[in-house]
Image 1 (cartoon, rainbow, N blue to C red):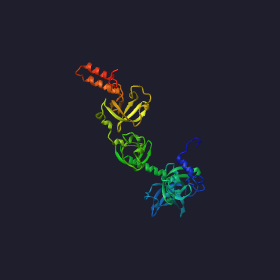
Image 2 (cartoon, rainbow, N blue to C red):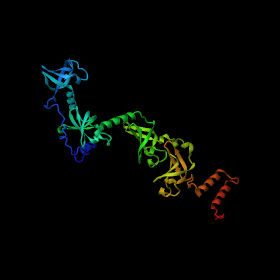
Image 3 (cartoon, helix red, strand yellow):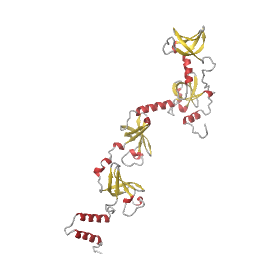
Image 4 (cartoon, helix red, strand yellow):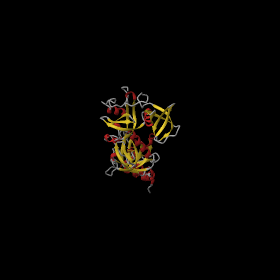
Length: 405
C-alpha cells in the first residue's frame, strides 16, 4: 500500500486486531492438495458397485478401493465418477474418503467473498480461531458480530457461517468475517421489507434520531427513512427538535424509495391540507390583509398570511422612498398590513405591497386622502364635480386650527 492510499476500514480493523499476533505460531497452516503428505492428493474414481456398507471404486487398471457408503448423500450408481483421497491400504484394497476429497476441493475453490462453514476452536486476545474442515482460520473480534458488545466466547465450539475476507496461502493466513454475513442478511431483509412499501403509502414510525436537517424515522424491519425539515410541516420550521422528539411516534407518507430501500424520503406536511388549493378562493388581488414577517432577505421579506402560505414583499414595495436595507424597515415577527398585487397558485407565488394602488404607504395620511379623492370621484356630489373637488382641496389645505393658509 502506498503512503497516500486510504486503507479499507475492514483492513484497518483487521490489522488492529492482529497487532502482536503471529499467525504462524497459532499453526494457521492450510493444507494443499499438491503437497506430498498422505491423504492430500485427489484421485478420480468410477463407481463399480455397492457391497454392504462399502462402495467399490475403480481408480485405474488393477487399482481398486473402498469408500464408506455413509460418505455419500445417496447410494451411488455404477459408472458415476467421483473424487477421492487415499488413506492407506487394507488387504490390498485402498481405503478411500470422498468427504476428505470434498474438503480439499472446497479449499482449492475457496476465494475472497466465499461463504464457508467454520467451527470455532478457540479464543485469544485478537478474536476467534476456527477450522474450515481441517484447515485453520482466524476471525478478528470486530468481525464476529454487528453487535460490538457481544461476548464472543459464547461461540466456542459452535459452527458459524462466515465470509472469507482474505486468503494468503504464502503466509498461511485465512481471515473470516461473520459480521459481513449478518450485514448482508440485514440488507436483504430490509430490501425485502422495503419492497412491500410504495411511494404514496402512509405508515406509522418512530423518531430515532434528530439532526438540524431533519429526523430519521424507523419504519420497522430495519428500515429507516429521512423526514427532511422542509417536509415536517406547512409552517416554516428552523429546527426539527422544535416539533419532534426521539421516541415519538409519527404518521408519515412515503415520498420516494431509492437504492433498494436504503434511501427513503418521508413527509408529514403532505398529510395536511394544502392552503394553496384554497388560496384563490380566500384571497383576491387588491385585497388588504395583515400578516407576519417570517424571513428577511436582501431583495425583500416573506410574509406569512396563514400557516403554510407566504407572500413576497419586494424591497421596491416597502415605501415611496428608495429602501436600501430591508432590515431597516422590517423585522422578523413583525405584523404588517399589505396589499395583494398578484396570486399565482400554480407557481405557489403571492406578490405583496405595502403601497396602495396610488403608490402611497397603506395607512398613511396620503393613502387616506387618496381614498377620499377616489371615493368622491366615484360618487358625484349634488353640487357638481367641481364643488366636491374644491371641498377636498380646501380640506387638504386646512391647518389644524381649522383656518386655511
